[in-house]
Structure formats: C-alpha cells, structure tokens
Amino acid sequence: FSIYSEATSKGTETLQEILNNAKSEPTLSDLYGTWQIDNDTHPCLQFTLKQENEIQVDDAEMHKLSEGCCSHDITGIFQSSVVGAIQLPLHETKLRGNKAPLYFRWIKPEAYKFVLHRNGIIKFVPIGEAITHKLALARLDSQGWFDLYKNISHANKYTCFCLGVLTKDGT
Image (tube, rainbow, N blue to C red):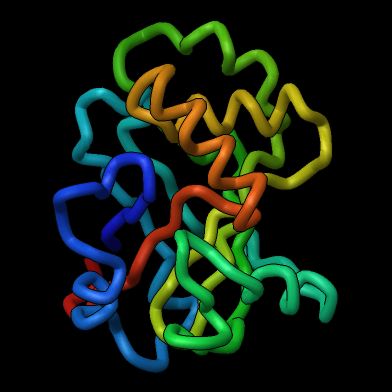
C-alpha cells in the first residue's frame, strides 16, 4: 500500500490522486502477509499482518475513525465504512540494522491497529493511551524531528497523521 502523510506529502501526490488507484471493496485478507518498507530512513524494514491478529472495532471507534483525517473528511468526500481491523504487535516488525532507536523502549507490545475502510484507506491507530507510547510511535512514523512536530499537530486535530491506501495491484 501507499503511505500518505500531511507532513511529508506536500508537493507530491494528493490523497485524491492516491485514492484514484485504491482497491475497491478490499477485505482484511488483502492485508495479510509481510510488507516491506522501502523508505531507508524508516527504522523498520518490514512488518507482518496475520489473520490471527484480527481485532474488533466497536461502534464508538468506527465513528471516531471516520470523523476526519489528513485535511479531508472521510465521511464526506472520501465517505467509507470500516471493513475491519488487524493488530500489528511490535514483535511482528523487523528493524533495519542491529540496534533499535532509544524511543523504542516506550512502544507497548501491542503497537498499532490497522483499520481498513471500504475505499482502501488504512488508518494506523496506536493501541493504548500512554502518551510515551503514542509519542514513540509518532517519532517512528516521522522522517525527522520537525516532521514529528507537524504530525503531532495534525494528529491532535484529525486523530491521525498518516494513513495507507491499499492499491488496485495489492501494493
């Protein structure tokens, strides 16, 4: 899938351009497997999503997850319902190099919930409320410290700062 972040997507593809190539009516099984991260500055090399890690999305989360994201309203222009969610435990990630960044010590074992929407959008939601956990995940997903600041500001407004889009060719 393609990753879209307000902090890093200025001057590149817009969310609408990415969605034009999104897979219609995706299922959670489209997400199963090992995904490579081709950004060499990201500390993770790959992660694996498995069927046994499917988790429930309750009604309150469904509403929250479709409120607004990345300066766009998913319930408006990008209207879409939730297909389901898969947990990404930290042990299902593989790091680049031999040493984890210092902020990894604050990431909880549960790490993320990947929430798939019918329009192909995948929202990454931190599992847990600990601020150190959320900040460590935000740093993990930011290209640098300045992007971390922009991503946190954006997340405070839209509940996320980064999302994926499952493309028609399954990448």
